[in-house]
Image (cartoon, rainbow, N blue to C red; front, top):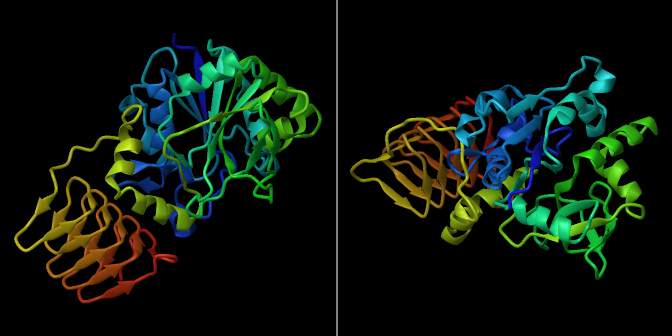
Amino acid sequence: MKHKMLGVINLIHEPDKLERLTQGRCLATVPFGARYRLIDFVLSSMVNSGISNVAVFAHTKYRSLMDHLGSGKHWDLQHRQGGLFVLPPATDDIQDFNRGDLFHFYQHRDYFYRSAQEFVVITRSHMVCNIDFEKVIQHHLEREADITVVCKRQEDLLTGKARRVKLNEDGRIVAIQDHFGRLESDINSMEMYVMRKELLMEIVETSLAQGQDHLVRHAILSRLDKLKVHGYMYEGYLGVVNTLASYYRNSMKLLNPQVWKELFFQPGPIFTKVKDEPPARYLDGSRAVNSLIANGCRIEGTVINSILFRGVHIQKGAVVSNSIIMQNGIIGLNSIVQHSILDKDVRVEGNRDIRGADSSPFLAGKRKII
């Protein structure tokens, strides 16, 4: 039986250390995996789990977010009842704008009250995974929990940052790290929370009345002894992408066919905004080894262990290795690009030699000419 769930993708104060990659866009719309954006993973997981009413709480730099999501038709969310809602901050006051997520939930409380769903699934956008929320809600009901937190036992987060949590033998959460402190545990919170909508609204109003406005730090952490907060252990692939190093390392993991297959197809497919472009063209003398190459690319040179987004042109004699080249990038004649991240519309002219390092990739911002 499919349970009635309301999806909330919370972008309020989302942690972001991606430097120039998020200079003009929010973390949710950072390009990932040759043709996707980070938000596509959690949004597709919600749709595949039968969630047909999704609110995206936007905060800053959300023009690209609205452009990418549109009406929600690419995720089958353009319904008359329910559908996709992008909810920007409902205030112009800078002090109110900088307040926590509970304040912004309260500003849009009409959205929650008008929704018929009984449960709410609150997530962030930087947890790259493919998860069945129906299993999470089943676990939530079996444990008779007030709040269920999706967790993952994973020591190496590929330099991404996540809150650590501690569970007792019954699976109940007894401690949650505030921000990124020093809690000794190999279990990480995936910043995904399931609860009844009624409880969420009660928490929102009570916390704000007490001068508290952060969901995790104030509302959940302070109630661990009063509410039954349980952990659901997720077993699938997880990439935590909220630093530049974690973006690069998790992108490179996609070149492992096993990881790629699990992340993009199990338990359901990952959807994104569709653009009709011709297939990639490989001209005489070109060579591509262990790479993800999107539609519309034109390959005349050599591509090794790299990710090329739509419309990239690798000219003759150019060699690209261990790099990420975003949409419409051009690598000029006989140029070498290694361990680099080039944002959209970057042009590398002929006979250039660009080399970063695995631990510190070279980064070029949008429309840069090198």
